[in-house]
Length: 323
Image (cartoon, rainbow, N blue to C red):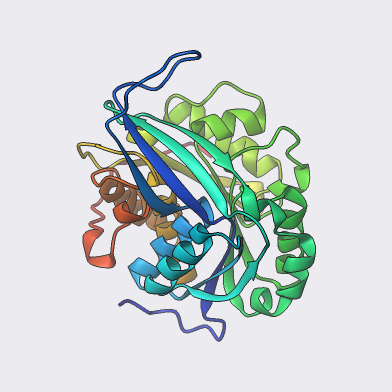
């Protein structure tokens, strides 16, 4: 276990979704009207919030979840799984009805298509966040994604601002009516398609595209921005004093990918774990890139999230953008 953070606040709080992932292995992704015979079905604990919480816990970070579970059998299974992973569940709210479910189709080329049924996640309300104000005030950092209602996310960001608690926002999935206020966070992290949706631009295909997009995210109000580019790597941008920006590209670790599910969650959990320990953004991204590289070599969402000794960051090639 690695605990080097000496702050009086000691815990990362993940406010987000918990899903049961029903993972269908299939030769190809289905097209409209097609019936396919799939290879198999697996039930895997998931949800972007839960995945990111487990990612932090496995690396040795202290982490709690502010989330909702349903009153169904999946709810009990999901709770037991998070407990086993060492995630603090004090702020989990129980809602009558089904828990969140995701139907994940993964084809033989490792591409995936995902349908999410929010269930209890959709019932997590701004009032639930208000009730958990103490958890936010005592957090060293709060992680958010967009698989819970947007008003709920906004309420969490506002409470973080009041308490001077850092916010990392993962913009997945991007809603049609993305409020500008969501850009006003300490760190915004998006992938290629999310970046395109957020900025109304084509998806960044290379580092130069991503440099421009990262600048736009900072102009929108984020203090720092990270854009993940799949097998290419990532681009990280920070606002510096004197209205300057520092932007760097972080090359991906070269691995043979067999399943990209939760690679982004592995990246984000590792990023938050490092930032909470006081690591600078660029260095944190190198570590996060190594965590994501491990995740794509293992099947499944949470099963692929690495433990600390499985993350092997190496000095990446970095390309720095002119100021």
